[in-house]
Length: 166
Image (tube, rainbow, N blue to C red):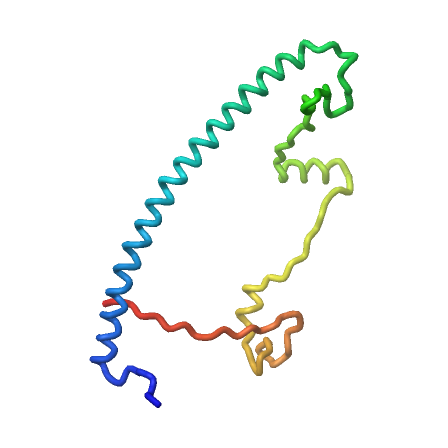
């Protein structure tokens, strides 16, 4: 049985680096070619989507104009929308609820000054500060005086080896 190849010296390491670098050059060329093809296809897709959106906008503008000409007694109305049924679907005019842009500091001050009870208080651990006074012993987080910190699971990770070209 033949022994698996291993790096035995610097020459072997250099040979491996050069071989892989040659393979990476071809791989990078191929990746760039694929990215170029993807860009072309994405441009074509955007053009088709723009054409679809224009067709939908044109259709909807004609339908909106027609919708306004329909007698109110044929439309079904609710608080948030109006509908008119056709054999191929419904024309729906929606009335969305307003959007609110809040300045939370001003709003909070107003709530407090008005004596209202609409303030939410959130508690959260200051983990970075706590971590600074802890260490890991036997797979558990402990304080400087050895007390085990509850609520933290230590998940060890494998070291990562990198090669940086010089």
